[in-house]
Amino acid sequence: MLGSITWKDFSRHMVRNRLSLIGIMIIFSLLLLALIGPYIAPYSPLSTNPIHKLESPSKTHLFGTDSLGRDILSRVLYGTRISVTIAVIVLIVSGGTGIVIGIISGYFGGIVDDILMRITDLFLAFPQLILAMVVSAALGRNLRNVVLAVAFTSWTVFARLARGQALVAKEQEFVEAARACGASNTRILFVHILPVSISPLIIQGSIAMGGIILTVAGLGFIGFGAQPPTPEWGAMVSDGRNYLPAAWWACIFPGLAIMFTVLGFNLFGDGLRDILDPRMR
Amino acid sequence: MISYIIRRLVWMIFVIFGVMTITFFLARVIPADPVAAVLPSNAPPEAIAKLRAEMGLDKPIWVQYGIYINGVLHGNLGTSIRTRQPVLNDLLRYFPATAELAVAASIIGIIIGITLGLLSAVKQGSILDHSGRVFSIWGLSMPAFFTGLMLVILFSHILHWFPQMGEMPSYLRRPPRVTGFLIMDTMIAGNWSLVLNELWHLALPAFTLGWLSTASIVRIMRSSMLEVLPEEYIKTARMKGLRESTVILKHALKNAMLPTITIMGLQVASLLNGAVLTETVFSWPGIGRYATASFLSIDFSAVVGVTIFMALLYSSANLIVDLLYGYLNPKIRYT
Image 1: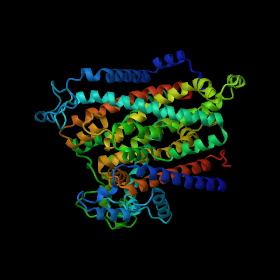
Image 2: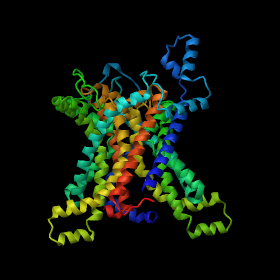
Image 3: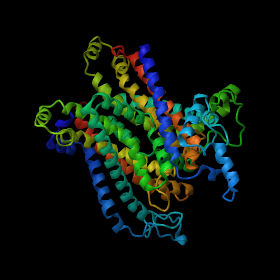
Image 4: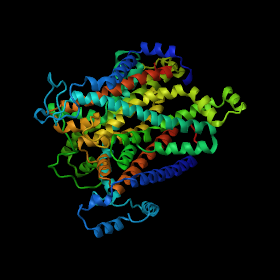
């Protein structure tokens, strides 16, 4: 049963599973870097220096410099904050939308459920990246619209899961009791059903993080995300790509940053999945 | 079964219609004027008005929508302002390259994925199991574009084993177009050394895209094997004195394949997503690159056309997988 994991089970299993522990450590260092990155970055991420362009990694520039002489380490550090912030906002927007649609659908059932779930299916018929590209092209290519584009494509998982949770929860006695006391539908939905349905949704959220970061980076790489000179990882890889193989550092360091970030979330998510589905252990 | 197929097809038509509507209106909120993309900035106002009328942009949006739907029903997806070709022609021209890439990637994904998943389950808890797990989580964490670039650096720039981009050397002449699928056409032309050369070009992009599928297949294969292995009929087969390899390959694998087939249907979406990125990295002349270029130049008809096309591919793949699943698993009856 999804909802019945105790915090003790969770922490015990996480510590025992070395891979998820590594995931948690990566996530924590990432959050730390997102927080303090801009203070420990040796240079400004935007200040160009044509004399020192495409310099290989050295003591003064640990990760080398890019085609405009900007310090790549500093850009990667600033990029951490950008990626983490975007992913968290996307998660809040898409998770929020999906949860509201899902619990309404599951609680009311009938025609409301039919319509909302058909809309959800419709969105699932789009390949995610293509839909995000349409939204981003339509609204204008910038960071804010990346959030909207990715959220627009990733709320469906939460809607489905929340619907299932609401279906189970609405049959419980405390919901009936609340209804008998004259509580409004809105109150039952958000005060009684939502809290008991939330833990699998939170777990789904951390599993979804890796995918969200990948989509954001992918959009940045093909030019639909952050525009120059914003130090976004995907866009940095795309820029560095023009100077391969000689200046490999311009492309590899931001790429590794994406990889480790997603790896952290996936390792953590994998551990969570093991707790949910003990057969996989 | 027949009624199930019909209901699914009706639903698919509804989905495509919905996708078309959503994309049409999304693409129409684009602030940039498509006319400005075609004409020079100093074009006289009459020319601009004329082109607007020609493109139907002077009519109210509902009328434009009606005209578009009418066109689609007659097999006309409009004309691309970038390539100046009918969008349908463009799609059919670029699709084969993507299909070849996706098929090659799936083959790689299925072979490595099933083997690794099978071995991981049989040798559960061994080094092999752990490395299989790391390999698959790693694969899911690599952005396709980064995998592609790493492979290019290693195998093209450093080792010079594989070509860096394209589907064949640009100085050679393409074989006459018969099916549109380059490798097939080359085979028909009987030019076998070129076929090898094309496969050689295909290797890196196919592996880049295939790693993504491998990762998901390994996981699902491992878990469904673990579910099947303790079953009574496996014990029976062992007790009959069958060789372990027969038990695994004949009895367990067959039953463990079902969930794997479902995941392969879902893979089509990630193949299409991945194709957009992989084709960009390898300058692969497929639909993904066509999509990126059209979207970046706000080529309205092409944007809607590509999206409908992708949605159609994706829904058909899912339908086929569902039917296949029902066929392989008689326990499921579609009602």
